[in-house]
Length: 474
Ligand code: FDA
Image (tube, rainbow, N blue to C red; front, side, top):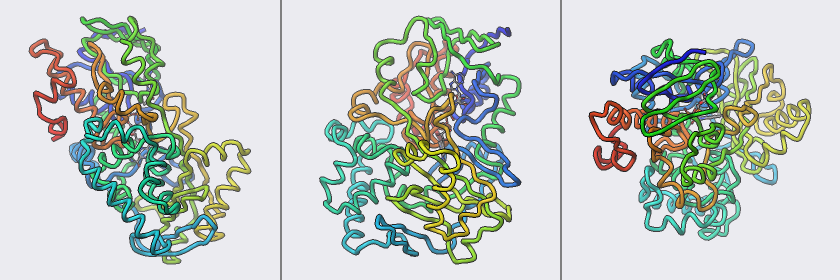
């Protein structure tokens, strides 16, 4: 057993924990990062599969994600653009396949008009929502009482329009059915990306990827931290008092002045706190749960869809695989498709045997892109739902009414205990960008408090001292 004494101990070596540790080290603090897995990166993870680079977890960056952009600039990491040339494919609920170009789905003109009306209303409200405090919106209580599914239907009686617009937040982002989360939660998601139109625009939100993969960002930060990162050290017990903390890993114990718990909120209760956390924190984080999505990877000898003038982008709100994109990695000659199977469809796929599952999924992809889609030489499904140290994908969101009721407390520290993860972010919520922003914020708050040269400001204190939290990201 190794025993260490540090200024700050960080639990979790995902992008948020590593960024926090990196910033604290730059501020002259001593740190130790304890990670449960045998690798860094958390929900970002990549592997070589038969010569193709597969990003099993998070991968895309959008132009507004300046927190992550500033980190990769510092690390010297380049990005490359997703392949976007050519037409897209839309699959209607009745199985009609349409090849189309332009921004609008090829649906009835009246449905396009309804979709645009819903998008405009989402944009209007989103502009009024502060992603760091959506619960402060004047209609927050009301918007948190109604499911996104039902709220859309108060605005339109066009079922196809409601389903198509719902998809961008439900299947596409929170990876939960639209009846399980509120309209306010949906507005947090859109305000975290600047606008709803940004989320709807796949060329914006899925703009670029990292040369060296998204996990490469965490690896680069971990390299700078060197021996201060301890893998295979799940923390299951934490002693704490106003004087400091002791975190117990498998073979490393760290005493420190402060701790940052940089794991997703659904895992906070894996740790046994001594003394227990206050009632409010015990209850709050139980209302944040993970969505579920299967990320499908299929690699082909060539990107055959490109030869047919297709971009590889496909949408089918009623299909098993609801979204498909060309996911060929930088400079590879093989072609890779990525598809997403969300929530209820994901449940159904996991009921099948492995062989049936593969057959069903590839057949569905072939309805969009033709029989060549059946001939995948690599077929792999990302399944973070079965990973002990994640338990879902992409991230957590509140149940109905939870965001308004508990959101204001989600980022408050409990004495020396601070929380940091993309799940708690405003801007960049659910994204690596949000993880980076939260890591920086936690580091800034702690750096101000850890020496005893400044009072422990807490969340509200940091806001009043530094203005908005966003200014900390500069
Ligand atoms: P993260 O979960 O990454 O890291 C937490 C770490 O804590 C993990 O390493 C875990 O092992 C560790 N841990 C947990 N419990 C512990 C314990 N008790 N003791 C010690 N360690 C513990 N984002 C994006 O920007 N673009 C994208 O394209 C996508 N796509 C995407 C696809 C898929 C399939 C997934 C699963 C996720 C995405 N995301 C994404 C989301 C993105 O990956 C996610 O928001 C960030 O990785 C979150 O970073 P954090 O550091 O907050 O948590």
